[in-house]
Amino acid sequence: MKVTLLCLVLSGILGVSLAYTSCTKQSDCAEDECCLDTLFFKRAYCERRYPAGSACPTASVYKPEEDMFYLACPCVPMYECLGKGVTGEDGKTYMKDTTCIMPLWVNE
Image (cartoon, rainbow, N blue to C red; front, top):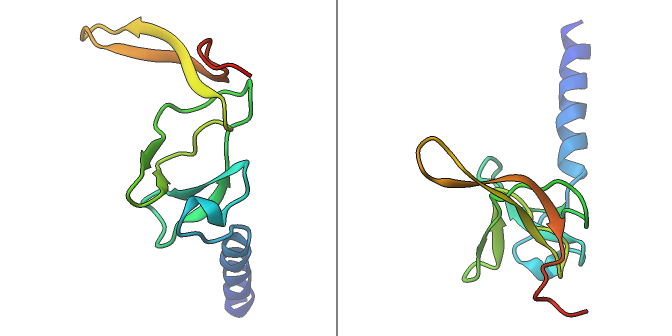
């Protein structure tokens, strides 16, 4: 029983690690992916960018000197994660209902 459980756990870990492509820079990933370091894993990996019209997090941080994104991937190229500005009780403005949209100032 213990051996079976150990095999299942190891298979799950191996399956998760094989599902991602390791990367060290953006060019290691496909155009619709970003090289992401979530700070939780030892290695960065290629993760899909958020598609046009989808909900997205505003937490994407790009470090040009490392050519790497942290916390979350951004939207696909030409799109930005934008939403409604809402002022909280603390007086700070927050983004609400964020979505990947093409900004008005970008020409196709």
